[in-house]
Image 1 (cartoon, rainbow, N blue to C red):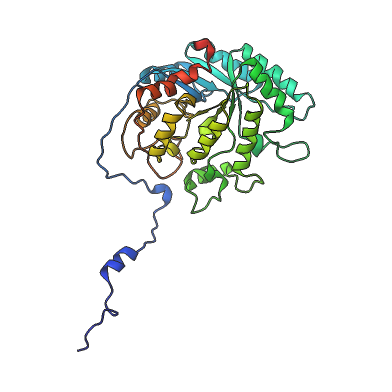
Image 2 (cartoon, rainbow, N blue to C red; image 1 turned 180 degrees about the horizontal axis):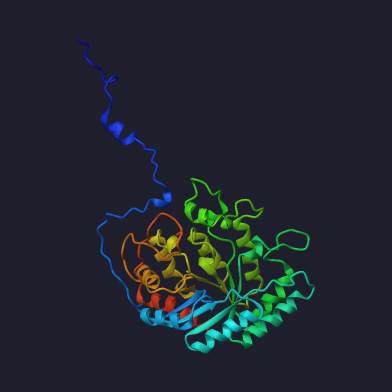
Length: 356
């Protein structure tokens, strides 16, 4: 009988660690349940009264929203209406009439007539009408820089000098400007097997901007030039100023632009998977961060936000929309009370003078 050699006998450990599998289970049907046994702290009401500075309530009944707010300790919600013209004014009136102490409204930038030579003055007149109806800000959405085109067919630049009078007027009117510029980094990458937000982008392929002739960093730098040019105007960078994946870069922007605030709406997935870095960031920039959700008000949604900010819980689901943002969970930041008070309420009060 021939003796076997080590070359003839498979190594069981090598076989074990090198084995792979091809499966028929669809990714959309894969819903794993964590076997991690860790503490769960449900925060039914926030530690302090909350101002949700970033939400979209146009589709909801004010009384339904008030019921949810009362259950969770949300004192005030800022509705960012996505209507323009008279419809926007009517929406402002609707919420302000329902509960003037509980709702405010940020208006939506109307690009109708952008080709006109007097567009800046037309816009300032529109801003004044919104202010007359109680508007507490104006939002410039990501269409500026990504999809709006000039008369020659090129993309309109965020830092186009033609818009400078608008931003200057906002400063003179005491009207904060919210910028949703660019989008998550994954939205600028191919929608393929290496994209960490593949499922979200598969559900919303129009959110992908990989083919556009502009990069995410280009867009953010255009926006930052506008903020630097208008130091007397207050700017709010929605969604962590679209830099939640790179808090070092976000810190550089805040250091360079003292008139920039940020909100955390829809960015718990990014912040909560880097809890050490995020907590240090919140402690350092506590005076510049606004609480916001950017999700239709629901009791459990708010409680997940509170759990993220207030507890040291580990590996739990983040609040998100139906397609979610990535296949990971988050960790709590257990922020100290002085920071929570600023983020939940005090920072927003500075931008809402009628509540002071």
